[in-house]
Image 1 (tube, one colour):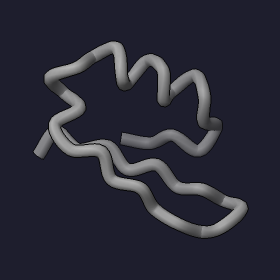
Image 2 (tube, helix red, strand yellow; image 1 turned 180 degrees about the vertical axis):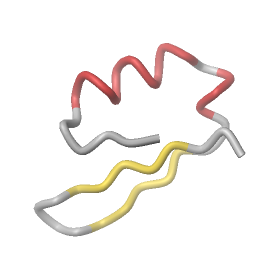
Image 3 (cartoon, one colour; image 1 turned 120 degrees about the horizontal axis):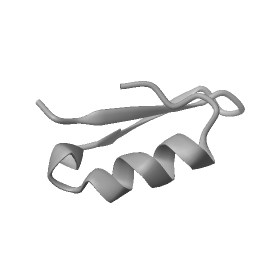
Image 4 (cartoon, one colour; image 1 turned 180 degrees about the horizontal axis):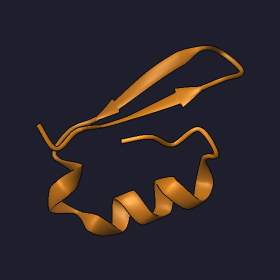
Amino acid sequence: DDSVYVIDSASDQVKRIANVGRYPWGVTILGAASPNYCH
């Protein structure tokens, strides 16, 4: 569904970012900013 889930290991919260496939720059920023990035 082109969503990205970012897991915050400190708070154990999962953040869902929908339709990120339409905005490739978002993936790059998230991937660089979060060591827990997965997709």
